[in-house]
Each structure stands twice: as C-alpha cells, then as structure tokens.
Image 1 (cartoon, helix red, strand yellow):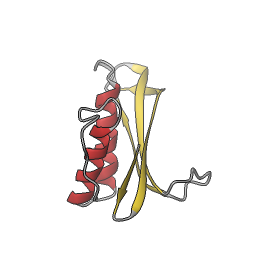
Image 2: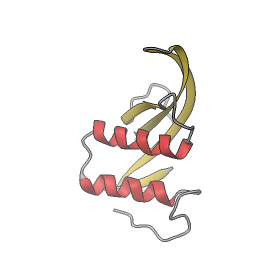
Image 3: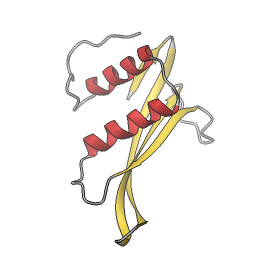
Length: 112
C-alpha cells in the first residue's frame, strides 16, 4: 500500500506469522504475530535504511485469529512509535481504509 504525504512516498507493508512463546501458566504456546512497516521511497531496499517505523504485535493466545484486527493494532503501534503528527496519521488511516478490501475501497481519497 502506498501514499504520498508532503511530496514523500510512503509504503506500508504487513507480515503475518507465528512463533512459540512461553506464556506464564501455559508453557510454550504458538502465538500469531503481525509486523507493520512504514518505508519511504519506491524502491525495495535490502539494507532496510528507508524504514521510518515498524511494530510487531502478538495475538493473545485465547483471542480468535483476525488478520484485520492484527493489521490495525500493528499499524497503530508503528504510528505511536514514530510520534506521527495528526495530519500524517489521518493520511495513513485514510490510505489503509481505501486499500482493496478496506471499508472505503472505491471511494475518492484525499492526498495531503
């Protein structure tokens, strides 16, 4: 997913996976995780120099799996980690909800 904000191209990517963690009282438990990454520029770099923010969130072991809820939580955590301005957060969420499969897909979006 891409958006342009203040003449800078940002790319937002998500990665889902699972890993084994030790949960107190339950022992080793397989947990799902989602990583949200915000990058600048168009090129896919190999040295990760263009990463603006990144966050990893785990699904609580008793919660039902939901990729949508995980993406939202990871994106929210990434925006909090970079202390994003209100205008930037608004633009990111508008782009997120306008992506294919988003709640505003097919509607006109604003570009800041």
